[in-house]
Every structure is written in C-alpha cells, then in structure tokens.
Image (cartoon, rainbow, N blue to C red):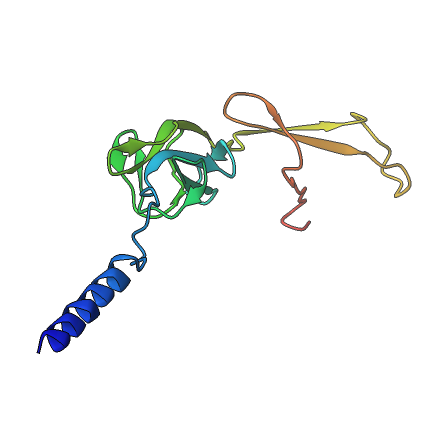
Amino acid sequence: MMKKLGLCVFTMLLLLNLFACTDNGGGDKAETKLIKLELTANKTEIQADNADTVVFTIKGYDQNNKEMSTTNKIYKDGIEITGTTFKTATAGSYKFTAKSGNITSNEITIKANEVKRLTRILLTADKTTITADNIETVIFTAKGYDQDNNEMKDVGVRLYKDGVE
C-alpha cells in the first residue's frame, strides 16, 4: 500500500511539474499599447464646390513604433465627422484631428477656396471698321473675369451672331 501511495504521489508531482513548465501563451511578452496616431490627407486645399474631396488616412503606432490597428474617429474643428473624407460648399479653413481613446493625432488644416465664378466678359476686336466685301475679317478676343476681377483662363466663351454660333 505504501508503494501505491508513493507511486500516486510521484505521478501527481510529475503532472504538476509538467503543467507548471508549459507555456500558456501569456509568456513574458509586453502588452501592445497605442502611443501615437498619425493623421494624413491626400491634399490640404480644395475648392469649396461640394465636390472636391479630401481623403484622410489614420495610422496608429505602438510603443515599439510599429503600426497597429486601431479604432479611430476624425474631428473637424472639435466635432466628430462620419467617414474619412471631407468636402464643403463653404470657403474657409478647417482643422482636423483623429482620436482613439485618449490619444489624439497631429492636426491638419484644410483650406477650402472660394469657387471662382465668371462675372464679366470683355470682348475686343482687332479692327473697329471693315469693308463689307466678304474678304476682310475681324478677329474677336473674349476674356473672362471672376468676382475678384482676375482673368480666368480657359473659360470657354463662345461668340454668337443673331443666335447662331
């Protein structure tokens, strides 16, 4: 009986030792922790036409400066936006940041420029008089100007006479 008890104690100690030395996956690995968010944009200026769009990218980095996946939110002037893009019809400057938990990214300023509108057309001719002989011609030049009186290139002005181009 003493032999059986000794064998039983030996087996239990052997099993206990075996389980105590097994790596359960926890090991000595340090916990990965987000320490930095980086916000980038594909451009920093857009037209305030509600079509030109900025696309944001957010990257999170751990304590070893390795990229890691994170759950992020983007904020425009402190207010959360939906998605990772921005467009507007209102000219101005907008400040963006990203947040994940208590980590805040760098700030990016996006400038939305006022859309230039054609407000004036200047039509000039190279001659003020011609002979009506079906040979002599006049060359017309049309220039377009925006609301700030700046000349606009390639505005596509077409000339019509009596409703015909």
